[in-house]
Amino acid sequence: MGFFSAVKKLFGQSGVKASSRGGVAPATAESAPSAAPAETAFSGAGDEKLALALRQAEPRLSAWLAVVLDGVDEAGGLLWQRLAFLLRALETPESEARAFVEEFRGWLERMEYRYVEDFRSELQYRLALALDLEDEEDERDRLFARLQDGLARTRARFGQGLAELLSGHSALDQGFWDEMEELFIMADMGAETSLALVRRLKERCRERGVTSPEDLMPVLEEEVEAVFRTPKRIAVTSPPEVILMVGVNGVGKTTTIAKLACRARMQGKKVLIAAADTFRAAAVEQLEVWAQRTGADFHSRGMGADPAAVAYEAMDIALKGGHDVVFIDTAGRLHTKSNLMDELRKIRSVVARKLPGAPHRTILVIDATTGQNALQQTKIFKDNSGVNEIILTKLDGTAKGGVALAVASQFELPITFIGLGEKMEDLRPFDPRAFARALLGREN
Image 1 (spheres, one colour):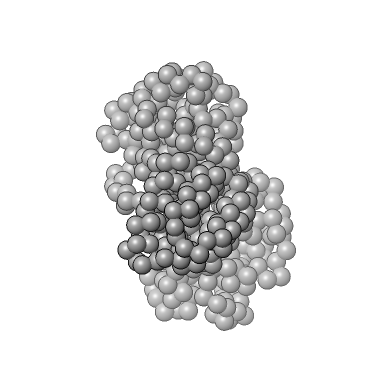
Image 2: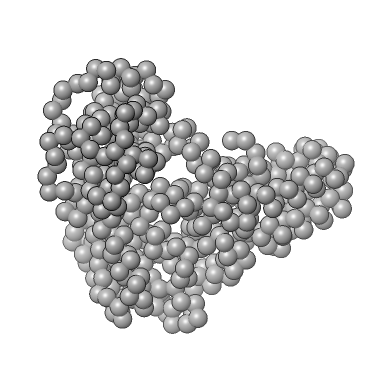
């Protein structure tokens, strides 16, 4: 829908309907109750007091949600009525609005959440996705605040050293650059990345006539942000979009798939998750639980099955079932590297036979807390499995956040999402500018 369109809708200035990209996730047999309670019925009766409060609120999603939740302590009829009213005020088609309310109700029941304080941020996140408001300024501010918190330990180690370096030198001499290089290496940026970054900083400072450490910070911020610049990706025009998920065990791959599936569902897409990590029974079971929680379809043949056969059958199901997105989970046991890479190549081959051009994306999930080990993992998977993007998990609370710079710079792979916690809302699109400013302790 877009933020400004949403504002116009709420104030009655636009009759444009919700966009397909921002469509609310349809209710499914797995995710929605068989029948909505009477309280969720869309009677069309207006609540002038609520409408007035919404119009008087600041034009941002968090402010509108604060109005909707005022006096609401727990899930129940009043919450469903208010959510329905907000969606009607934004001219969401009735079927999509009803689906959103029922989907969220079902999710609360599955998660056994009752009180608003337990699910408020998740509700805002889902509304932002469903209404296509994720780029709204308030949502960007929320992401920056989370980044600031998540990178606190990294910034404490790196930022203190940077402050001492800047205050301890009066000129950008060779001694200064040597110390900065060492500081970068200690921040888990890696020797190669650190050397390249210092070299570019020197060149940029000469070009701009920057000669003192106190004037260096804006230049440093620009260079850090530049490391993460990524090319535009061509969208898949003939669904399903097939996404191959790779990464070693323990990096959070399964929950990352769940979070990606949740995002896609909230954007109105039909999702299938295929459990091709058949080496571990727990991985299959966990993935099935997450599929049920997110309302995605699920395909598995159980432990010990041929992973390529699972992927092949999943493609059949997706093509016949009209799915928009297919996530294929894979094993991550690097101690049998040769077998694993052969397995990945076989999966890629059978998927491509079913749908030319697939898999369209191969995403490597790496754990930020592993520091330099993440570089070795990235090298192995990029060399052997056609990885073309990175998701960096567990950034919250790690002192090794600088590894993001090393991965992006050394392998020229885009970081598309970052994990900042365990909740569905904690997987966020990667924002290079916000990351650079949070890492360096700059204001948003």
